[in-house]
Amino acid sequence: MNGWLVYERDNIQRNQFFVDRWMQAGARRGIALQLVTTDVIRMGVMDGALFLSDAEGNVPDFLVMRAQYQRLSEHAEQMGIPVYNNARVSRFCNDKRRTHQLLSSLVPMMDTAFVLSETRNCPFPYPVVVKASHACGGRQVHMAKDDASFRAALAALSPDSAVVQPLCDTPGRDVRVYVLGDRIVGAMLRHSESDFRSNVGLGGGSRPYEMDDVLLGHVDRIRGLFRFGLVGVDFLFDKGRLVFNEIEDAVGTRMLYMHTDRDIAADYLDFILADMG
Image (tube, rainbow, N blue to C red; front, side, top):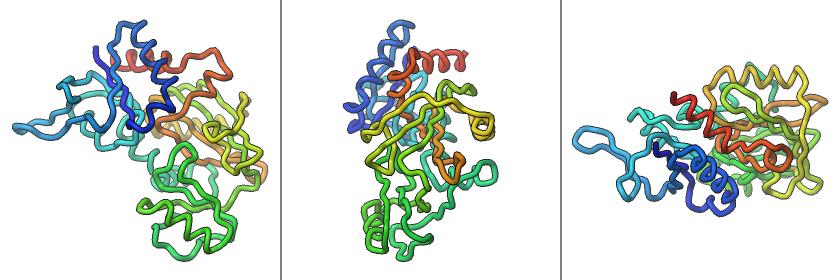
């Protein structure tokens, strides 16, 4: 069995530890895992049929998507090739506008406006957080305190659209809940003393977090809408409660390796193999 671990080429170096864990997990299970970058993938239609291969003509039995490439996910699934996370997760969770639209009646969230890069007027009183609609990992996220910084943030995110939210009252702290399939496999509190963003990849700290019934209920309602592989569901602190922030599709896993004995790459691969039967 041949599986592709799909990354954008620019993201491999900073994710090398996780890539190595995947390769080790595959070798222990007799699965041929191949690191494939999006720039070498060939796909399209030939002689009336869909095709998909790498530069050498290899065709995968399954894909582990660690890149935002919804078109590839849809194409592979149409060919009958399983994709983790699947194309529906990619469609909704890699576009923050779609995520908030879908979950708006299910979980509490910050007021959120969807704006274009050419928008001139801020929809909320300052300060606000301006995020690219397709941002991930805390990148392409800005705080704006006035009209000048608001428009500068949108210009920096262009040509992507953006979501705009009032700054929560406890910036620099959030909770990430890891979901593998239909199981919660960990929850971590992330914190930063120097940045309104708490991402570990941006220098923030972390520690395990004990979930209460309210948070469990939020996560249960969210996972009921999807057939997840592995994702992170993030929540902000505001007005004494946890409110939904976003779902990370190609979620970072370093906190699980830092604070638990879990080898999440191996667990994810086992989940995929069981799911494929």
